[in-house]
Amino acid sequence: NFSYLDDKHKIIVGKSDPCSTIYDIIVFANRDVRQAIIPSYIKYISSYAFSSCENLRTITFSANSELFKIGEGSFSGSTIISIEIPSSVEEIGNLCFIFCFSLKKILFDKNSKLHSIGYRVFEKTTIESILLPPKLKRIEEKSFNFCKNLQNVQFSQNCEIESIGKSAFENSSLLSINIPSSIKFIEERSFFNCRNLEIVEFSENTEIEIIEKSVFESTS
Image 1 (spheres, rainbow, N blue to C red):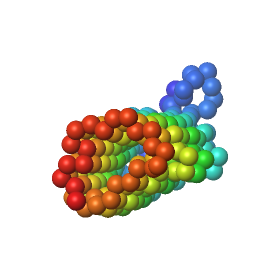
Image 2: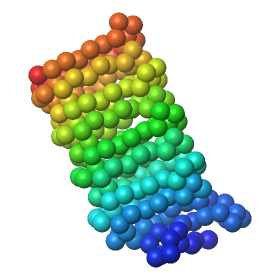
Image 3: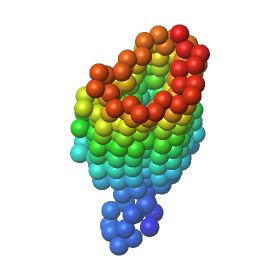
Image 4: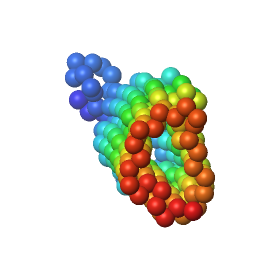
């Protein structure tokens, strides 16, 4: 139950339902692939499908995408420059974009359904700013660790985020951060060694309950 997505036989696809005629899972990409156009009927990108694709620059998702999950390490170590996550995506797995040293821009649709991103998901990328989607519940451990170019993180209006995980922004270059009122927990070392961080603001109606140790240690 496997086939090829493209004429050059660079990308292998499979089926979530063996009885179906639709190949809706991206299983594996040849490591020399340069670009990928993801059809709307693809629902899942498997773990490490595009990992270490050192020639991969662009990923394009077709309109009305049905993609709901991007698996663990799917693009880790690849050379993609930017990516726009379809609104249908609900989950991004652990390590998904780790070591994507060329990745500068990540965009989420304003109607994004994304509620979960895994640990170390953007670690050591070169993103400079990011607007997090409204339904995201938690920033996981080391999500943006060692993002040396990251200066600006914004939260969507009426966001539902409740916690910032351990070392989430450690060693980043954030200049300021506005903590949404929905945040209840900030775990240890979340902003540790953010040496350019000068301004931290909490909303007047903040629901904060716990700020753990060393959260703002070695900041400005």
